[in-house]
Length: 249
Length: 249
Image (cartoon, rainbow over all chains, first blue to last red; front, top):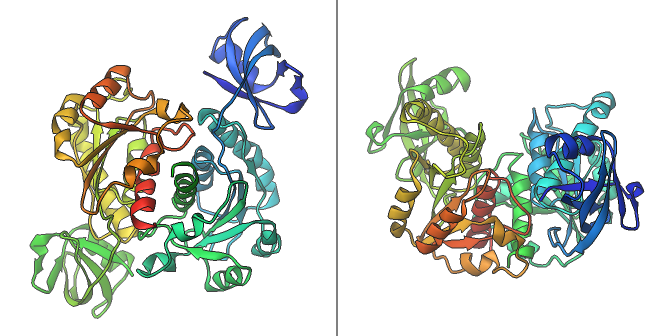
């Protein structure tokens, strides 16, 4: 069944107002009518079966029929901090990472990032990125939409890292070590409700200086299997690994 | 270090001949010279440090300096059977699936596949697909190149399924079931050297008839976490799950 995320302001008890793009989608794309049902997601993560009261071109109103008990959110709060990649890889990471359960996406300006994003470019892109994670959340039946933050520096990353229960960075050198510690050794210690920060390097990987700084800030270097993954594949491995360990064991 | 896959015919003991596209890459792109080293992958999965003897525009010759002990291949033989997806998703699955350790890729004509590939179209595309998995194997430091097969029917899939130790299909309905069996319950039983067949539906998922036929042929329905994944994300979850269970625990 079609699902829509509806902002808090548009809820009053069991009455729901839908405005903006979703109206067009309901009326023109889905061609729904009065009495039709959809799933309404509230930003606090609750979801409900809703029945349409009225429709016009600017406004759809609906009522909660029954609250649903959905369990599609990860038991942990996962932040993906990604060294700015080239081309459209970032948008790809946003879409797939949302399907796989990430809570927050934060791009960072790594030493080896070829791409540079100035604040003007970012202003233009942020709405598009938020649309991508919103649509991916709907498609994957999530009840929360991940946040997409603005670009941060390595310094900011290090300064804020004390806020997280767990801090990891994917380090290519670990994958080459036969004897390196297995990923499950670390993931198996993570508890429900913990916050997990995962840092992924850009195409060229982390600089030795960045790796040194991350280690000093108590980031644990991890390997993601024995093969060398592209920068846009690494976050998917991490997210799936966390899902397997915490949701499928 | 740069690595190249060299066909059996071009090995004689420790002498290596390189022809075709790789010559251009070595001479013009990497601008290597006599005495430079690269990693030579043999199709049996062995790899060696090789030193260049001679170069010209059509032929590079090299000698094995030392054999390497690399462990980048999955301990199991994984076949991804994928319902024909739309657009360039198949090429994306080939690239990412190779990074994540798949051994064989087989597209199948599912009831709900929007795309249709005739043999003429396939003849044109197969070389391109083989190039994608070859390059992804080199990039991810694999020592074997996965195979890409031609499109099969559901009947062929069912008829050949007896050849595999384990047969699974990703079934969306399983993800919606809170009480469904966890993925690790099945993956934890897989032993080193086993052959694993994973069947993924197209965008519309499996038809009920296909799901029934697969169950009858002893395919086990599995869920891939509690979220609904796109058809091109599902194989990445399966491959990462197998990697986590068999390589990272």
